[in-house]
Image (cartoon, rainbow, N blue to C red):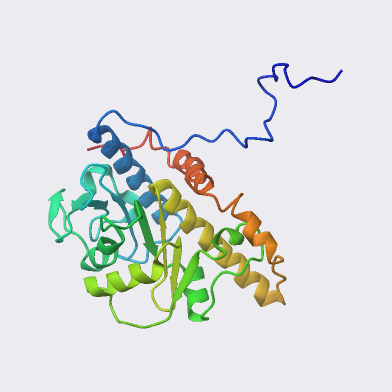
Length: 270
């Protein structure tokens, strides 16, 4: 028996027309509610960073714009282990570098890099920076991701390479230069300073970082074994409608959020 267009579709039938049932960023009644949500997500993301070994000593930062004050952003404090960050450890910094909320200090390097990315005219709600072995290796070779699979195709035309060595990133001018080079892209790979990803939500920016690093690993492995065959030109562009969409990036973080066990851990403690 076939169904007609006017008949009701079974509730459990997969909808292949409008796409998967993916929820977006939740709406909040107050700025305080939105801030609480972002801070908890930030602390969880930092713990994941530590668990996956994305921190390098005191290096590695993740930031998210404050939902009420566009000139402020929340970030992990200087010198606190990423694996043990709690919501109470997070600090809020304004555009001048002043800590307006929190009991700890900010890393000068983190402020210099993240402040321009969160400038009011910037489209980045969140930014992630880390120096993983795979991104460092790819950067040292002077290469960007090639579309050797559908996941890496998510960055096709949306990544830039920064090959200049400007020394330690403690100057806001350096941060502005990086932000300008990044432009409207979602990833910047530095020859000497790791990887930066941005997104319209913290969830999205963190997902892109994890995905980029995994893709870098796959590319390095493939090219070490032989000549890797990239996707045809039209295929990476088509991937923008699949693994390269913003909703995919946002939703991709949700499973990792569940991995943290945030609801049962000491993470939410203020």
